[in-house]
Length: 414
Image (cartoon, rainbow, N blue to C red; front, side, top):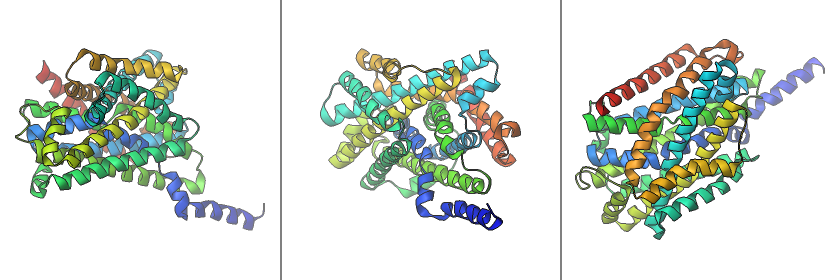
């Protein structure tokens, strides 16, 4: 190939990134994991926080989403730079006992996630159609297979479906915030950080646990593998597309979480008693107008179904990456579904189970984030695509803050 042909070839490759269609095709992985940030666990914790504390904890939601965006960016960079997901890198570079420990806690995190998603969707099916909780949970588990069919060898289609689900959830709560007359002054005051009492700390930990999701870290590093093939002159443009993907998806998820808490603060604060269940939230929202209640339940259903598929996909990534093996999808779906069905069949407070599952996830976050920070700092791992020191330093500060919050929470619980 002559010199002119080489230049033309490189220009053609670079021009692909200037075309709107190509830029749009590179978006998607972050929109899949963003669904995990508006799942039923977020509904439960944000509604509980809004009912108990009004607009006070909105700043926690914002900080949690900024942390989540940074963590997800690092996860995507790791996958795109190495061509391997975080679980695979841990397996290759850490001692076997540590790998086994990380795998075990990751599986527990996936189960806690699935509990929130299945229980949330089951509650939504009961609110909308009167389906019993146990039957609704089983139906949710079945629908998940259809969601996951999109992910198998059809990642772009899976990404588009999740982006559509995220749009529905966001739109429902933006409309709900208008219908419930959310106070802009209250929103502004809620952005000012302030200390919280014991109950506020529990809710803050739940918000963090429901926002910075460990299974989403593993999934995002796997979904971003398709960017690994962009090299040399395309590399900078691919990273730019990756940043746009993460920022846009997490901005939508973050705004959705703020809207959820704001709706709860506007409609439930002072009216729901010391605690609030999703059923009570539905009834009280109904007093604001039947459309508000229906939007809430419909968004909860979409969130439960979509995030359940993402959670099961993450479970496959975890087992394949840490153990270099996998089990049939129906068997995995059944294992992660059983805890949720147990909660639904025993008559336990479903909303309380949702909040506690998010607190459990908060304790699992460091096990995903700390290895991620270690490997994204290492030039030998990032193969010529290092992450800037200030991004690594900010990520480390986020991890320290999360661990500190968990320690405070544990001390209060003991």
